[in-house]
Image (tube, rainbow, N blue to C red; front, side, top):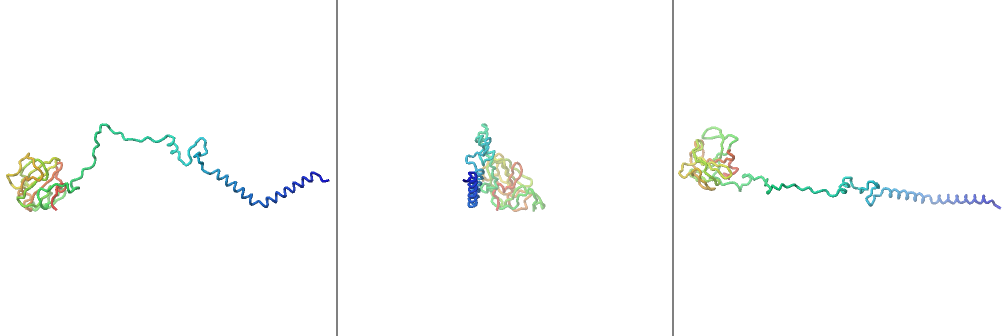
Length: 244
């Protein structure tokens, strides 16, 4: 009769032998299974949280948002800043710069006489004077026009002075509403010259072209015309449609 211990040992040996054979036959499948389990664990570890929880119970900030954004959401929308308007201001001032007369040719005034400029404005440079036979400045423009040609006011104004200038001859000075002044010189001696204080309209005749300017008597028959702003002569072409 066989010993029970021998039978048990034989069974265990056969069992181990069968398990070893099973492992040898199915080792490839077992390795694949282990790899799949490792991949599943890694995916579960690194996959993003759907609920926005970042894993820190003490800092449940949404994943993918910066600390500043999280703070802004916690504080709520920022208040809208509105300009403070002084109740004393009843009208907003217009700071649009006024266009210069020369920037808009349509705004230029009509000339005092029709003709070409024979001696131009030259306050910052010297030009040659035939009459004086020397180089000198010129505070106005000389507009060629036959003697006796009517001279017109370029704009409405008041006759400030009518006088005999030592070098420019008989002159009529007008002051206009904007404070600008215009001077019409080398006028003819005429009883129709306006009186001081007389109001004149734009294009109204205020004299005739003459030959009374001793400083310009050698020049072609012309009207000497000046335009003054703030008491100083400026180039009349900035305000008057003169010459060609």
